[in-house]
Image (cartoon, rainbow, N blue to C red; front, side):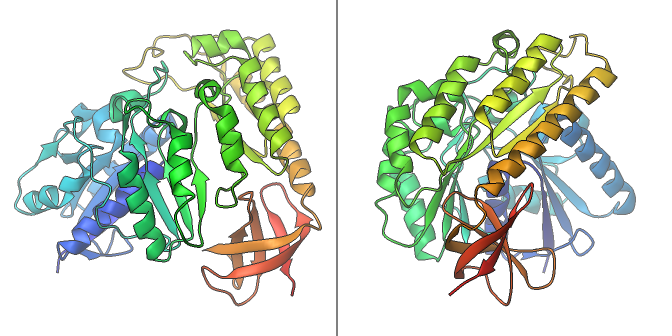
Length: 424
């Protein structure tokens, strides 16, 4: 039997694509294996949204060619549509053609290099899948986005916003719950613009999803703040529903309006702070994650200090910090970069502030008692990770299994996690 391995990096949408490709290949009688060494065919489902990931992917691919010259490589994910010239000798599968993975692999096995890059299709939601975590359904609700950020390749690789019909999403969620899933992750490159192309919106979808019978919770993926004025009141009210994790991933990107304008972001600092304050006021237990880019070419010292001030005002629980990288084939490739030492210093200061803020936010949970669902195995023996209603990561020790529900008390707060003990 022909074996395959899927090497995946990047966002939850990429992870969902990998699970569906694995499901299709397994259905076609290919055997899924855990390592590249055991595989006849290796599918690189690569993310290149950030330059370091792109560089890492091409380094990894070159190493693969040297070490495994006779294995078949299939390139999927964002990488191929970002840099097709570098990959013209490989079998390629576009981000909206994942449902054709079996065809591409079978042709490659017969020495035919098939490149399916058309971006006009939409992979069906009801494809078979092999879940990496049996408790989690990563459910794409849309593909592409409405943005036009000059340093990002998402638009080029994923295309314009294309939302799945609400009925198809609800049906897929029902099926997942019937299969024992405990967490449904709504995945998109911008969940907050879901449905704008088909005459609906995210709150309307959530209203249907929370009606599904079963013991599960919904995690809403990243959404850009500029869409919030369209439905913020309705969304806040829906966050009160016990089936929705009190988790909000809202990218700031920069704490000064001039930098945001240069980035072609469609929100202002004031609008961002308003949304965060609204959720923190109405949902006090809200867990807020944000994204910040440091060292954008037009970022002055004052602009940077504005970012630090917003972090102090909004006290996010988590920050994804990235540095500006010039990207080939983007509008910012020719901008003059800031000195490396300046960017490194700004990144370090922001990281230190973030760690302090995160620890303080976590300390609020010490002595909290409540229920968690074990959804991940820890790195150490007898160590398990669960999530509470705010999607806070809680580490416990004992003899448990995925899906167990435990009542715990938080006994220690660390920068990136909480430590809990099981109570009766």
